[in-house]
Image 1 (cartoon, helix red, strand yellow):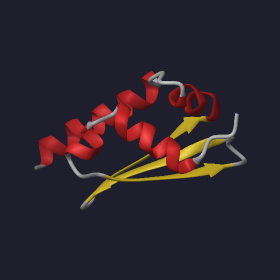
Image 2 (cartoon, rainbow, N blue to C red):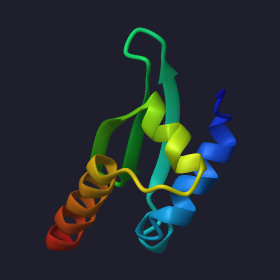
Image 3 (cartoon, rainbow, N blue to C red):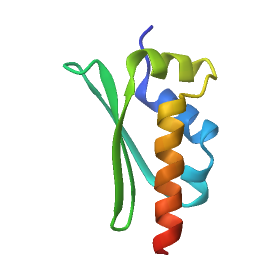
Image 4 (cartoon, rainbow, N blue to C red):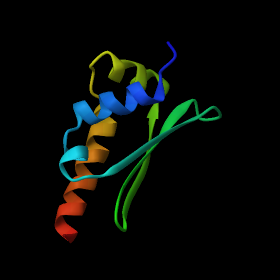
Length: 84
């Protein structure tokens, strides 16, 4: 399945509402060599770069949350809240 970057971004924002709640910038780029999406979350000086495997991105589009990615987002939010 080919994943559209805009559709994936929309789905990620829907599944992880803290991204919008805190106004994080979200960008996605597919890395052919890693066969994964590189996901950047930013807010001011705070930044997280992680990856989302192709199969996880496809599952995300079907409404299945990726545990690893969800943990990364939760940790970023926790760190962001602690520094604010």
